[in-house]
Image (cartoon, rainbow, N blue to C red):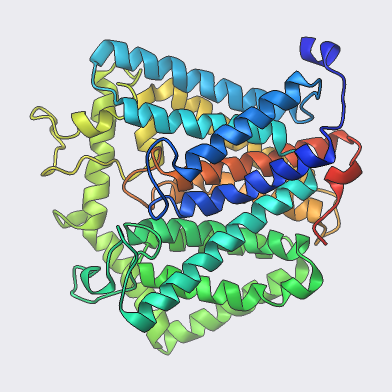
Length: 437
């Protein structure tokens, strides 16, 4: 490529590299604290994104050729596609939201910056560490809430977060909705096996109790899609190793036995599963509403001739009087794929889907032939799982595109797959190739 001819491979320097590592590690933290920290132009999440973008631009301007060029090109292709169809929908229908467009722009800028800055193993490890810190903050906040009965400003107090059955469950912690907490817990849990591989040995001792605490919180949030995503992800993690398969088989047999004996946790699991299916026939129930919103999204994309109505347009068109699938005033898609399809059209959705499939395939190929618990293999698996489970994870909350947590999720996938590409290409590691330990 032309850039390959003009820009030589050069080291960004230890200070710039350390700055990039810290910024990427801070992304999950400031995204999780977005509701608690100051808002507006000086919102810490926005400042971190701008800082990463400036660092990426400075790196390229200084003559450092991005080592994960395929990853960067893919991100730029997705960004260009969403930008083009978002603008087209905006011009055609005049219902797009500047606020939503801004959030999507930040997400794409962050992803592109991660593709430039985050192509080292150490950088990938620091990104995972950022999620661990964010998860630990959530655990501490939730413990404080349970002990004091208090809640953070702008969040839901425990006594107001009540299910339809009237049973109070754990509050939303750092967020304004338990479903966002479920999203965060799910991502951290899916990253724990990779954390085990990159953390120093002494730190690994905390991984199991930390994971159990997060599992308990995830169950308390009652985020069913997040629970399903974690179960699938942990099963796939287990299948990669002989002892993991043994543990998975033992857990499956144990759960089957608990189901036959009708023990409490097994009964609750099957009860939730049956309830989720029955709800599809119950007007106003969670599953029925999600299905109706999906039909509304398809109706919207049909009205746009499958080209989308622009960022934020779902919110306006889902409550239109002529929408046959309108339900009360519910105007959030509750699904990342539905948001993208209705607002950016089927072509943009196809591009996003191809990008996800590409990450999954690249992760599988990179993991092949590597030692089972090597950092390189686990980082490749982590990228594959976080990308492959995106349809479920992005549907845990009512909105996806405008959430900083969603942008942090995407940035982590980009960081992990960027390192995977660089490692497969055989680029020299130098300081970037050192694991945390």
